[in-house]
Length: 173
Image (cartoon, rainbow, N blue to C red):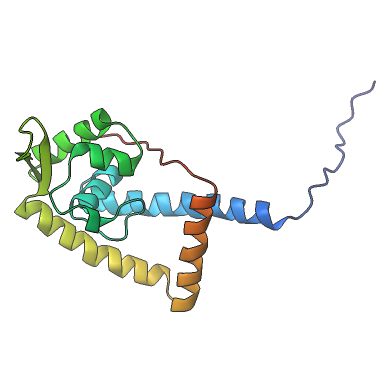
């Protein structure tokens, strides 16, 4: 059999499912770069930013219902939302504690367990982040109608549930 430099064209049919998934990948890559750039400007990692938002009980975090958490959060609750282990979250918590952004207090029912709260400095950073985040997000979604955004969010949430996408994490310090 002779080898030629000429290749046969591969026929890949245009399918809406593949088009959607490839666009999700593109969006995910672009948003990851955007969030990494923002967190870098603020002097914290993306994972630290997300953990601070969870401790602040941000209602926009997927897989997290702030109304279910009257008390300050436990590391296991944060780990569940991140889709990782408590030990991974503990390392992240220690970094934020060392930076003076969160405080650890013993749980009233079990003093071996620590509850996590924002310090005044941590709260101020989250407020600054929120203003910055809102400005960036408003620019990102400029030109889209509210109805389009609601439909998109509904679709993504149904897609996640229908496909039982597990929460995986790349939590690092």
